[in-house]
Image (cartoon, rainbow, N blue to C red):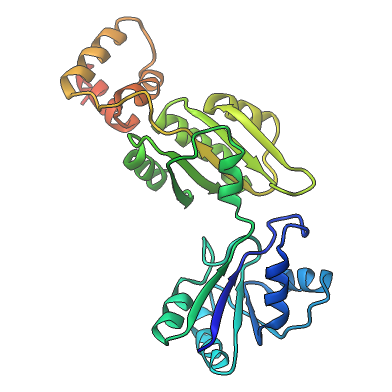
Amino acid sequence: MSTLYLVATPIGNLEDISARALRVLREVRLIAAEDTRQTVKLLQRYDIHTPNISYHEHNKLVRLERVLETLQEGDVALVSDAGTPALNDPGYELVQAVIASGHSVSPIPGACAPIAALVSSGLPTDAFLYLGYLPRKAGERERLLSKVSSLPYTLIFLEAPHRMLEALESLQAVLGDRQIAVGRELTKLHEEIFRGSLGQAKEHFTRNPPRGEFTLVLAGNTVSAQRWTEEQLNTELRAQLTKGEPASQLASRLVHPSGWSRKEIYQHLLKIQGKK
């Protein structure tokens, strides 16, 4: 039986591709590419003339049959615009279909933005959780973050430049002022890795408007080994309210040590103040 090769391609620097990946791209019968306009730049750079077709989110089900038919004759390579295919890119359904058809699926490892950002972040790498792009809507974003707020694992997200400041605001509001590493344009000419607290990151990217592609690596919850009880939370809130700190600021500050989400803390504050 034939093989579907999942070929990782560079995320920026075209030199970041393995000799094995280049050999496979030359030898397969067909290359299924997320965007042929992007892939052709790589193929031209290395003088590769293998036939290619587009395989993206909007035509993946139609193209699936074409790929399966080609596998009856020989091997096929799947590539994304950049990085490892099927990771935050189309490919999951194709891999399932190829396995079900009795063909082999073989990964050709290479560039991967989440891993590149993680290992250069300076944050723990022994246990991490990759969650892809943050939800666009603030409410959905905060609900997701609330679910992972108490986890001790390093968290990895992707984000678009026009949503960066909103994302940083949500991260700090729900998770507290944790340490973060922000990888921008990794492996490219203007590569930047910002390291600091979420508050410092907000200041930095307010002064320097976000441009390019971003990967966010965030420290896990290592302060709170156990979520506070409701009684402990209310006791602390009453004590802190006497100091005159604004409720929204207090709610954000207690997220990390308490293990409660900002929304939950704020609701308790309203009850204590008799506003709910």
